[in-house]
Image (cartoon, rainbow, N blue to C red):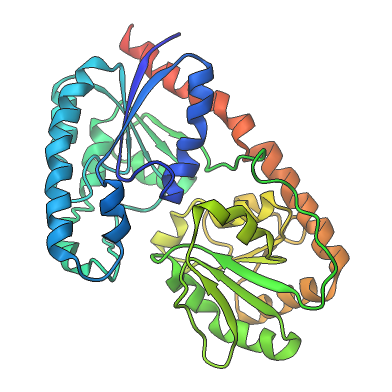
Length: 362
């Protein structure tokens, strides 16, 4: 079955974890199967370089206008494609005008999202444009779609209020790129976290825990995602996220952290941090929020912690017991290989696309 897909996405290829782990990893597989596709991003590479930096307000406005202008051409281009795949939204600002036009043109829309983007949110850098975000448009796009693709049950439950055609496809890891790492015996254990400028606030939940663990064990604390992250009294190895060294940076971690608030936003997360650690054989220690409780079997392939006492106790166990770290890391890797790998989920992704295309032709 051959067809053509137009991907309408916010950011350039290879720049945002959500895009990379939701659909970009499947592109090579689609090409192997003879599927033609085109990717059109709203944010240009030059725009992306300044998007999350302070200032440059006029440049950001001009780049945004350019993005809207090119979206008009994308709508015209859509007439030559069988399926339209929208990740998150066609435009990051404003109401769902382009999505409504696509629906009016009878385009078959597959809508994919992996966060609770229907909740109000904006980065501190771009908080002045918060009123232009229109988070309520998510429900409208869901209604207009032929199929909604989400990363967990919480997002599915929300989507089913507005569309009966909702499928779950988990966020997955390329286990050919993420190899099981062999840990060398070393003097100090590295406890680490990886994320972005928008999720660094979650790590702040761990400040007291990290202070106590640092005082007790003198551990190395590594933070990937914000070079400016600090905790008073602790020496932290903080750095910005880099695509070219992502796996190498993660591989330096011995114990991976994923704290989350138990709220609607936290329950909408799809467990990417935990899965990245697990794919490398790094035991994850996480909040039992949302999909984390499905990915992790407590005490087997990771730990789930409810309060400060449990965080300190479980991380301490892993710091003190190298065999526990090894066995838990191996169990974590097996879970990723069996349930959350690109290899096992790529055929499912293609089958979902074929199903929507098949209905178009019935």
